[in-house]
Image (spheres, protein in one colour):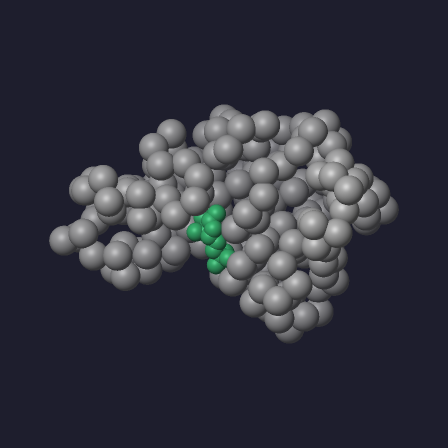
Amino acid sequence: TKIAIFASGSGSNFQAIQEAIERGELDAKVEVVVTDRPNAFVVTRAENFGIPVHTFTAKTYESKEAYETEIVTLLRDKNVEWIVLAGYMRLIGDTLLSSYTNRIVNIHPSLLPSFPGKDAIGQALAHGVKVTGVTVHLVDEGMDTGPILAQAAVEVVDGNREETETRIHALEHELYTKTLKQLFEK
Ligand code: GRF
């Protein structure tokens, strides 16, 4: 299965997916990493794996449609079948959605529909929840909406942010790989 990873940040989920592929646990190939942040650490990670990176700066385009059209052209050229969002901090627009309908997957660090949007872990802690978690879902036009594919829970111990973050990220890496495997085997 040919995939594109979209990321804006550290890229630890990208790395976990790529390592699962290299271990032979996930039958997929990352054709390109797409990022809107040229300085994000995900770019270094991709380079270390020898994976091509497509960088764009949204504000230099006339519209979302303009940069998404460029991305769709690139993905089509590479025969990409699935888009895997891994810390991509932009809402997916009509252009990508209509070209990859039900073929875009996202991971979010909460038990959706609780705490969509930015800093989900901070939102959950501020609310004082005792259990939070991770959700993998298909992407639609909303922010962290779309059909849920998988979830896993994490206990919040003493409202500790660092501990909760560590647990969530470890769980994300495991759940994303597992869910993608199921999705691609269908
Ligand atoms: C993850 O927590 C993911 O759930 C969220 O953004 C974060 C990305 O982390 N959407 P990383 O860049 O994969 O390390």
